[in-house]
Image (cartoon, rainbow, N blue to C red):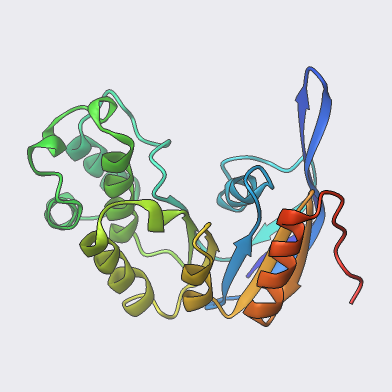
Length: 226
């Protein structure tokens, strides 16, 4: 389980403090798949970073008792001076896994070819995302964080991602953030809308979608009480 209890995240700016998450509380159970909707800048990626441990909350409690991936399709944790192959070796050593077995999987899955022997700093953002996703799949996590993975690669690559995530890891928890709302609908059983730092939760996609649309188009939108 992952539990947020009265979590706040505030970023200081030269114009004053910016409240990104305001008193957020929820739980994500083992095997549960939660899809989060919200406009650009609503704080979806901040939420992902807090769950992953890449950032700490300003206040409140985040409790985890299951292993959590880094954000899929995110290459920020790579050592960019190292090659893709060396990054696979590094991750394999940390998690005490067979480097050669992992490298063979990453070579096949990422389809980066000779670029695996090049420094990651020379990669495009899409290439980094492919490498990040492939490396994420060599480590078995209890919960996967998915931040706009549907925007990476071509249709065939998407299909490979779908098989790895939603067929081979159907029993894992997932927190999914995407502007592709029908991707969220297809893969989640529970939904949330993030707006002006607040989150509202739904068991029904259509209800969540309507609230998301209202929040997108009404300047001073407030979540309904019910």
